[in-house]
Amino acid sequence: MVTPEQVQGFIEKGLQCSEVRVVGDGEHFEALIVSGAFRGKNRVQRHQLVYAALGERMRSEIHALSMRTLTPEEAANG
Image (tube, rainbow, N blue to C red; front, side, top):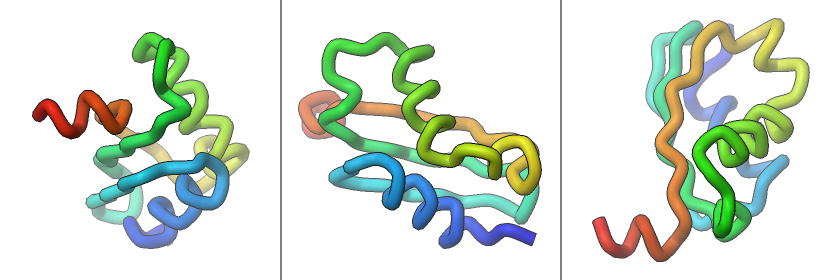
């Protein structure tokens, strides 16, 4: 079973982030991800970047991931 800490590590390894917070129960996870890579991208494009960072784990180990994806500027503005 995957832990929230492992999911956080997978995201941080595959995507340059200034902040990542993940909570979950081993199957369903919620993440806050702040990355400059999100600048100029819509929500779907941002989620695709996170899915790419997670790779095959999204199909095999992580059953559900709810994401809040923000640029550093959006995070600073609340």
